[in-house]
Image (tube, rainbow, N blue to C red; front, top):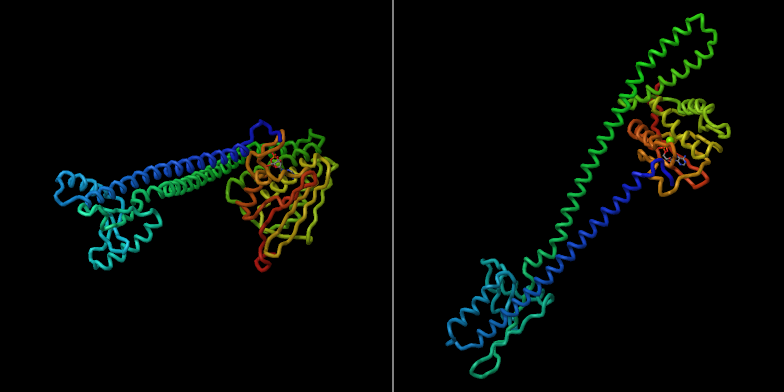
Length: 411
Ligand SMILES: Nc1ncnc2c1ncn2[C@@H]1O[C@H](COP(=O)(O)OP(=O)(O)O)[C@@H](O)[C@H]1O
Ligand SMILES: [Mg+2]
């Protein structure tokens, strides 16, 4: 849909969300993939180490005791180099010959230690097939003392497999906190802008309006002015200007709520709008009862109804039916449903219509509904939402207000 300046901030924002999501997935997936690659390499290396270790052990055991010292030295170097891969040497009968890089409580009895080692063997077997060590008896030329070397990944390797997940969770948590903090400060900033602009506008309008009022009084007293109808019209317009100032000053401060007849307020807005909109728009106000009361700030509430009704008229292109229904909810709520027979809202845009700056109109500012939402939610503790909408059939906006329990109503 066309937009005034061809740039829709909110569409771009949701695109940005997708871009950020895709990039994070690529980074996350990439880091997991790369770590897995490293893990596989390290695994290969550990397996090679353990194989050399087993071979060396087998070789050493095969030699006669009279073997040269330096070969012994070499094999011992290899044997002691493994300081990280946990391993257990056991024969087929379950006799444990030794273990390495496995922490055992030194206060335990040997039997208890062996039990623990045997249970570890069971889990190691599931990870890797053991390596057979079969030293050759030099005198007979046959293997004797066949043992099996059981092993598993080093702690380092295990930690490395979990590392990307830990890293990604930490980054995700940090990102979430940063996002919340950013969002919070953005909302606080928006509030300051709304309140500041409103106060400034009310302040600036104040002076010329009081002076206009004074001028009107002077003209009224002037016998030279014969056509007093002009003065009556001027009076009305200045009064309206006064109302506008009141709206701005209310939104720039904590507005006072009072118990008001919603039917009457709605009728008043409709009466004000009636001569200002196309005669082909039929306007109707209906209520469950003749009087329905709720807690509102009159100046601000009128502003909301005006905005929503103007949108309805716009949506109907100046021809159709605008109906306002005032209902009493059972839970001390009052519903004001504003329905039109206009062009409806595209389902994908329902969430966006309340965003400041969102408009589909050539000359729209996209502030009407943002303001209405702010007034209803922040100042009236109520709700405003699209109750239903059908393309080319019409839309219903619902405003939810609070009313006092009967016992508290002072009349
Ligand atoms: N009754 C409605 N029917 C159809 N679309 C609507 C209606 N009310 C609001 N909208 C949509 O929401 C947008 C935002 O409305 P609003 O915040 O009042 O800004 P503006 O009226 O300046 O466009 C409108 O441009 C329109 O697309
Ligand atoms: Mg509008």
